[in-house]
Image (cartoon, rainbow, N blue to C red; front, side, top):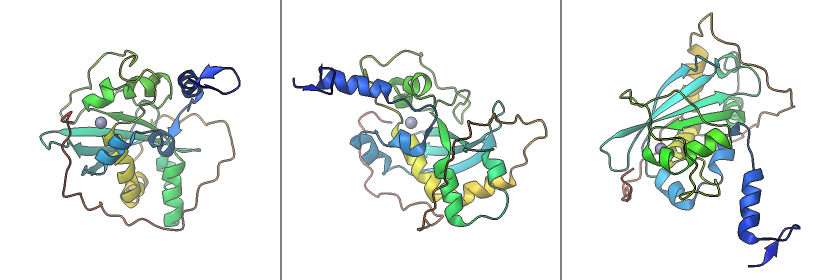
Amino acid sequence: MEAVGNIGLNALQYDSVSRLYDVCFEATMKDLSGPVDNLRKYRSKTLMFHFNDLTMDKTTGHAVVHFVVPSASGDKNYDVYIEFIPPQGTLFSMAQGPMTPAKKIGLLRSCDVKVFCTCPDFNWSGMKYNLKHIYDSYLSGYESIDGVPSGGEDIPPNVRDPHHQNRVCKHVLAAFSAVMTNWMRIIKAAKEYRVPANAPTPTEETPIEQTVEETPTVAPDTNPVPDENNSEDENGI
Ligand SMILES: [Zn+2]
């Protein structure tokens, strides 16, 4: 195997080391969805999803968006939760006041996110472990719509994902797309959410200048037309 980089590692070792140093302490939707494998990306496109509700993480004061995603086999639902952490304040405070649609979309894109899914893939393919221990983007304390917390042990995915590449399952990926098509509903829900008087005030991030991305094109606030040809999923997830 050919040595790459400047410390004489072989390609596999180099890849492994670079992965370990590719640390995202709280990552945006883009950071988390970038490295997803093509099969999961493809399968995520066949999923239908529903924006369910927007709540508050009682420990942080940040907004949590909840999607219900039917499994590919259609016999059960998974719950995806995404906590939005804007560069300043909370989504509730940032959603107040007049904003252009491009600003609203830019606001959602600029947020760091913490994610959680109740599917078995999220639990067993390394996402849960990687998000918790490597990417600091794991949202704890959430459970399925039936009140069942996602089970499983907190063990490193030494067999399924030894290089810690997995970050999100296809349901979370589908929910990221749903955020961008439901931006209007999400911002409206955040704006109208009655934040309790005793809500925690999020600690301010180090004031790094972050520009909110202006997007010239505006996505319509509709759910995408679901793919008619739902692919068979061998995991039944
Ligand atoms: Zn999932």
